[in-house]
Image 1 (tube, helix red, strand yellow):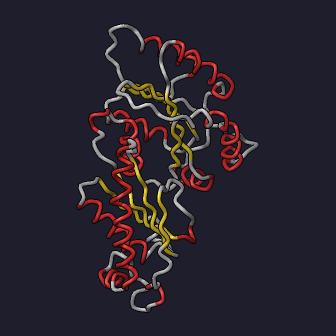
Image 2 (image 1 turned 135 degrees about the horizontal axis):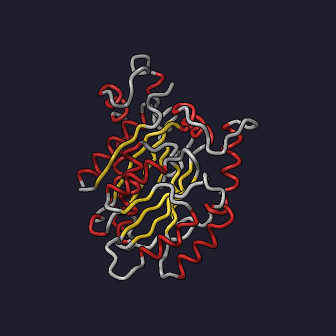
Image 3 (image 1 turned 180 degrees about the vertical axis):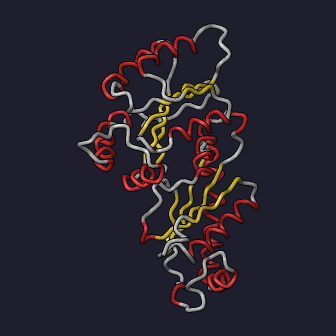
Length: 294
């Protein structure tokens, strides 16, 4: 994966798996002032790039969606990208992906057929085949985003932080994700904390059905000396780390806080972490990924 350049003149190509969110993402680019084209034919990419480079051109930031509905993408995209580079443009590739089961659910919910679907195959087979064929293109990407666990708001935040004009990037954006280990780690986690050393409210009959947003669960968790000591030490670590991340121009940080089921301890501690960071002037959002699961 190639490092993204930070500049106010951007030529972004959005591609990736069908159902991973390309159409949604291109709307986010529009929101931050990009000239956007959805599903640009690959053979027109070089022509569009020449127009973009014309002297006196007013378009500074471009985002183009190219997807696999055009079979040429697999064989010709590397060569066409080289043609674009010869024009003095450094294209940035944003690759979107998601878990197979998530893509299958999305196609089922929207009742859309996969672009590659035929009478002889099913959607699951199409998803796997497409993923395999996109492997080389994924290797060319500057940025890969897995949208499986991202809300619309979180996905929009990721696009804004990576691609918004530099004048809008004055601070680090932080997401604190409460999750359950039994459902797997968040794929885009930067820091992971395991809270399974704390007593589990699940085993308290009065608290089992409640979540960490309930004051009784919160009081139970935070009453423990080890919980307060953990927060004190973790706050100190974050206060040390975050200025270093900002110095290195990191614009997005996902702090994943896990317990067994993602319903009690991780939710309480995530809220405490988010409150601490917000008090320090940072832009923070909290995600409760598994709170509603059984």
